[in-house]
Image (cartoon, rainbow, N blue to C red; front, side):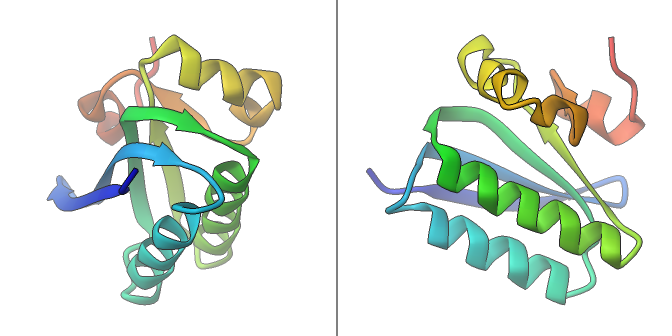
Length: 114
């Protein structure tokens, strides 16, 4: 399955909407796009995972790498995922403690969690 990556700007944040499955075959595309965004000084990133049906440990590694790189440069990576199945992956791995998780893009932009 091909990975969809669509980028847009929302109130000073770069939103990267991801669709499809993020696994060992597609994670390099996500990694490349995130590195490109961070290299372009876009250090306020929201990764929208609402259209992701599956992600594995490779995907989590890519997201953690982007988070570390963004924070090194004074930035931040926020995750939007309202799907219980995807959110559970963050909870099981305790990465919900590392990332700010939101149910919607507007909440992520405001930094407001329910």
